Image 1 (tube, one colour):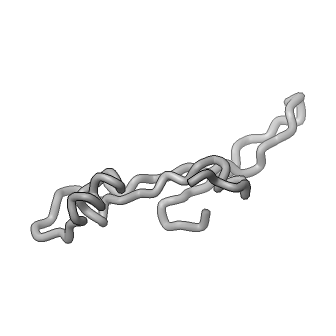
Image 2 (cartoon, rainbow, N blue to C red):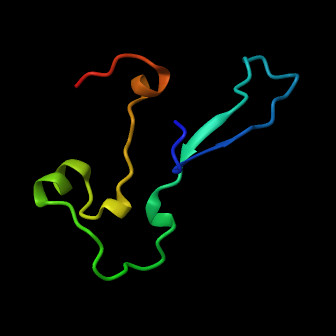
Length: 77
């Protein structure tokens, strides 16, 4: 999970909270947040690869790992 698209933060942990605290939370910042406009001549995936990845441009690709993969379990597929 140490990709450039992943960010973390430490939420406030109250001493009165009855649940066990989650010290660090993670979230994804998609690459389209950093591209203000579409530059000319961006490389493109082939049409089959674009359909598999969900975008035509590699610069905008952001993988979505399953919760099982993130937690270390065996993923189907």
